[in-house]
Length: 242
Image (cartoon, rainbow, N blue to C red):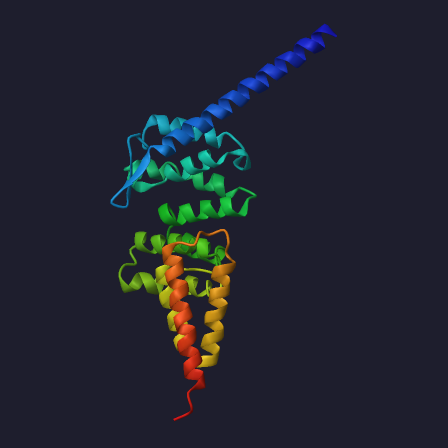
């Protein structure tokens, strides 16, 4: 009886110590993330995101099950893949294990975040094409695909051309990413006025049904432009034939 009690107390103590260490890791991750500020649209931090201290936090996080980490730890992992913060291509390359870790999550958004990070930082041409297929129809991947195209050397008009097949999968899915908007406008330009009006309404419905995404100024401006185009399409449909 005495031995069982001692064992129970020991296990409780070990659990509390482990919990304290886990909480400390989350607090450290949160503090590092709080150090990031934007100056002229660029992320900077007083912490060394490419150094040994950052690596130690990463190791601690990756030792946990991916679905058990907190939001601060998740944010830390993504920040540790930000090129401007890390400021070392070699160090970034050594952190590819982070995207593999995130992609193993059973949480769709967390796993998608891992795929987006791979697109932005690591994927070669073949892997980029594979990821674009896996992420087809998901507006949250639009920026990552765009950044992958740029990193792979598809610049200027070629960047738009490279991303267009993926952007076409986002039609009526609720995307307001500016390069996608060009694809949508080209899409409705080839429709008759009635078809165009229906396509625009479907686009508006998808944007408004996405309650998870904040109503940013950019999203509102896109909705306003679509409303104007609905009116134009309706007017054209009512015009008598020439």
